[in-house]
Image 1 (cartoon, rainbow, N blue to C red):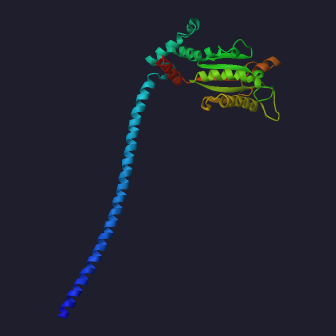
Image 2: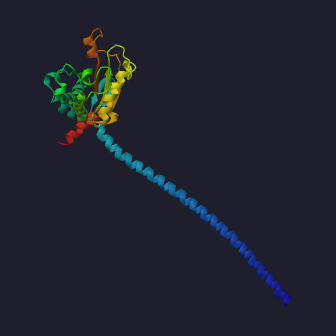
Image 3: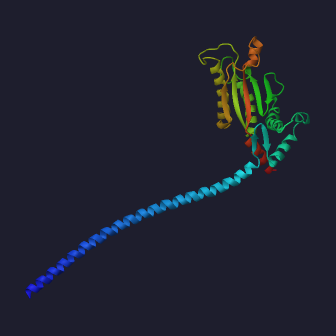
Length: 281
């Protein structure tokens, strides 16, 4: 009897030991499975996020496409040497051309000529309204195709051999800044020009240096004092390489020492702004 009980006890103990081992194995497998499931959940979450980003991009492109369609209706394209403009753009262009002097308009033989007149009109009509830019032998306004150039004599802006802007020049530069700010479709390049006489002092090393520093001084003033976007401004030093007159006498050299403000049209901006003006009426 005792012997039977002993055998039974050993069987129970043995069975209990096997169950614990199985339990431990199952528990380990469960933990491993749980970890794998969490990794899968993370992967699915990343996939869901990528799908969301992709869908957002698709929706964004749809919105951009609508915007592009509107912009393309006013877009100007160049095919070889011929300008092509949409019907909507031509309507807006004609409204601008209708404000131009008929005699000047009669000189426009091509669409490109008409564009030149329309773009320059928006700048020049504002410049000519400023007394500082009108009837002055020290200031000259010229139009070359779609580019408007305002040349200002050195003596109105700087002392001889200096690149520090005169205090008296602020009135003139304020008027210039008004013109630039009033026509946001234009970018502006400030060019410094000198005569051919050699220059070297404590501040500048030669004419290249002087012309570049003068242009940069004007650009900094327009940006820092008058809040004109730096992305619209270009500083360029020309030295004595582009004289208006031969540097053979004092008078000619004085005319060659100048700052030239080159107002460059961005035609896409130009037509977009025309459209905005028309929509606001």
